[in-house]
Length: 218
Image 1 (cartoon, rainbow, N blue to C red):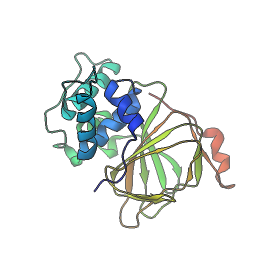
Image 2: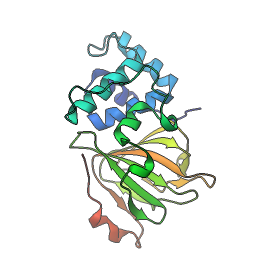
Image 3: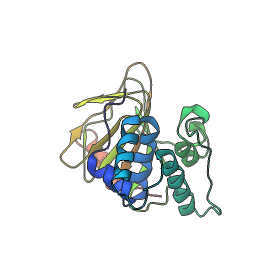
């Protein structure tokens, strides 16, 4: 069961087509997992959303994928079939297309002993869109945010001071939030992270990394 969802503001912006591309991609991927938000989006459409008025949630995902591919200068934009979950590894098609392969094909950057990050290209030059790989039982050092951080769990689970998050759960953190995500002991955790500003580690032994944490939009 999915317990954490985009808030009403994000859903309204997504429905209106005014959410930045990387954030919109993150919400769209959440919709592949979440029937609750699919129904909410349908209600927003019925209330008069001009841009997506006659589109079902799956069609919105197709449209967003086309937009991403257009940003990547692919002509014509790529599309995919109606069953977005029928993909290698069970991931939504948009994730698969942005990865352009498997985990092993990605370039991973080691941040700490338990955390690796791989930056994916969306064409949004104001937001970083990346995969976070947290080893089972490992913790991301306590950190705060200079801007907004969207997180979506793709595999495994993690917990922080506010709760436990599993596949499909969607979180938003801002500058007022300080947390230390910890992957479950039973399996590695893979998440999407979308940032509009770098995070900042709090612990004295990790603060030395802060000058090297730059936003990397692609």
